[in-house]
Image (cartoon, rainbow, N blue to C red; front, side):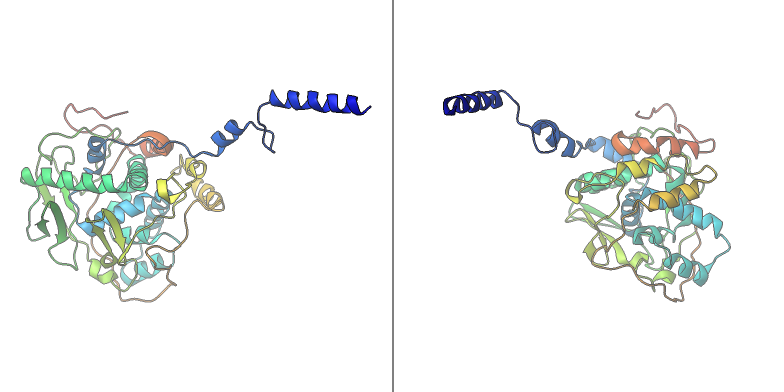
Length: 360
């Protein structure tokens, strides 16, 4: 009997040598690892990033930083723009106080100082989401792209100091600031021809009224009185670009997005599925759809730059006057989720410019 038991044990051992390694959960080890591995992020070339930042590269640094940060929260861009439309009667202190009470990321609140910029980011949501995805995954390269485009615009004579902006060059870095720190003028220009050699137009580009001028030049409309929002932590004075470290700064600290929309390199997992639920947000009833998505924590609540969300507070802030803005793009991964939504809101928009095709 003992000999038979030993023989059976030996046979069983030999049999196990032929069976692949199977983990506890019943999946082969290599398949289990594949399911838990994060997806590969599609990197954009420097030329593609330059094309992507062309619509905003000539904006003042603080506004550029707010746009980069806000673009990582595309769903909140939509909500905030809709909210602004629905509360168009709010002005000055009432508007600022109402915005302060919202649960949006500080970057989204900051963008309400520039209603047309916010509206443009909503109208061109595919571009906005692409910008946010690029900043999450290629932060330094995105910041470099802004500097490349500024250098091109400067060489073309379209970036220089005037009554609205102050342009300073420090070594290889071009800094753009408001001439008056209390008033921000957003430049109006054709982003596809303002940089000298033509830039390929993004698919479905919608030229938002107020920030676009035909021809190669740059003009300025009415300024935004951002100094009136200084009483709030999310106001423009708390934002900027750290060109040395190539990052956005919020309240003297590096801005870290807690958005759940994208996969983000060192920033970890970002939920694609919830973001995809936003196609067709502009359809009736989509607001309720959004509330359901928020239940899955689609927005990343949290602290940014060491500054926690503030409680609603009183302030003497007044709303500034405004002009307009623009955007539009579809690139890989998550951004394709927004292409239908972005195009559906273009209201007659489409390819712009003479003979330059967009990239699909």
